[in-house]
Every structure is written in C-alpha cells, then in structure tokens.
Image 1 (cartoon, one colour):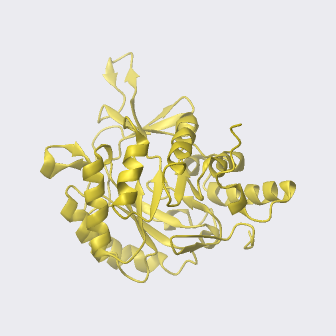
Image 2 (cartoon, rainbow, N blue to C red):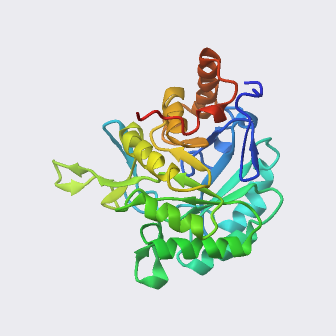
Length: 306
C-alpha cells in the first residue's frame, strides 16, 4: 500500500502514515509478522506488554475461543525491558513505522523506571497498561481507581519526554471518570478499550477452561461496548483517543472514527488475518474516496445523534 495523503495522521507528535495501529499483545514485537505484512505501511507498531523483569506468564491454558471473540490470560509473558532494549529493539527500529512500547508495572515507581529507560530516540511513545495489580497497594488495580491511574501517568510523565498514552480498562463503573483522571494527570493520548473480564467453563470436567480461571475478552463481541465508551469519553476529554475493540474490517474502524477516535488499533483480528492492519487501512481509503472525503480527520466525532 502506497502512502496516501488521506490517511496521514499525527497524534501528540506521533507521525503515522495511517491511523491504523496494532494493539499491544496481539502483534508480538512486530518482527513476528514481517513475513505476512509490510511493517513499513502500518500506522504504528505497539509492542507487547513489557515489564521491568522477565515474566514467564500464567500456567495452563492461556487462550480460548469464544463466540465472536477470544479469552486470554497470557500473564504478561515477556523477556523484560533490558532484553527488549538490547536484543529486540535493534532488530525492529529500522522499520519506517513509529514504535510504541506498552509497559506494565507492579508499582507506580516501576512505571517511572520503565518510562525513563524508554526515553530514547528509537521509541515514539509509551503506552501505560494500567490494568495490572498494584502490589504495593494491596492488590488495587491501577485501571479501576482514578487516583492510582493518575499517579501512574504523573510518574511516567516525570520520567520521559515521549508522548504518554494511557490505556483504559473497561472493567469500571464509569469510564469517563477514569478518562478525566488520566487527562488531568497529563496523559497525551488515551487508548481504549483494554479487554473485558470474562471466563469459560468446561461442562465435562466442571473446571474453568483457562488456567487462570478468568481472562480478557476481546474480538467482535466487545465492539459495541468499546464504541459506546469511546463515544462517551470523546465528549468529555480534550486529548486524542485511539479506539480499539473488535475491529476486524474497515467498516468497524470507521465507526470508531465517527464515535470520536482519532486513530484505531487492530488486535484480535491479527490472529485470523496477519495483514489485518494494512487491509483495514486500504478499506478506509476506498471508503473516503467513495464518500469524497479528503482526509480521515474529517470523520472524527461526526456521529449524528439527532
């Protein structure tokens, strides 16, 4: 796909050929997909969740298919920040696509340390995965407590000059409260939604399908919820939103733009179609041409409710 002026997008200083990114945790570190898709044509490569120390992840079954979606409880398996910086980053930094690193910490301080380590030229931005247990605070989930979420954003901002993206969890009573909290704390961008908490049961063994009992639900099944949340948040904040949740084709992405997202991320679709991000972008171009719309930004927030 050749660069198309209709799709060129800039969010918080992150310049992208298209507004279609890959969602963290569904695209590895990018290089795993290099044989199936032209990584130079993706809006941005968002690498899998990275932690301070290596993590082996959860035991037992970690992925299960569900009607119109999938459950996962990978448990943030990753080689750790140092290995990423010394071994993986040199292999992917030559691609002509911004690299965004999704980071997870067990304390506010860890997010700050990770942000500082990633404040380097090869990295375009950092995405805060605030859906992890806050070990120091008795198991509170950062992403469900506004004060904790704000504290993580402030710590990250204090330690990097890169744009900070706060990834919001949908497992909350009021997503707008969370969005406002991270915006006030200094987040440059909001990405949403992360997975919904779900589970599956084997009726023959009477046991949970997943080794971790519960897991994150993603895929087409969550799209209506994701759209509703993006629409709500877009009306309440003044920073850009990266919409995600069940985007399988261009039409899905267009819905997110109309709801108020300035960019989108393709996640679960990568498992069934490795070139999904590029295909979605191509489909958006055709839609814009058909509608005689000059630029994708002209769709953002144009939902007509009356």
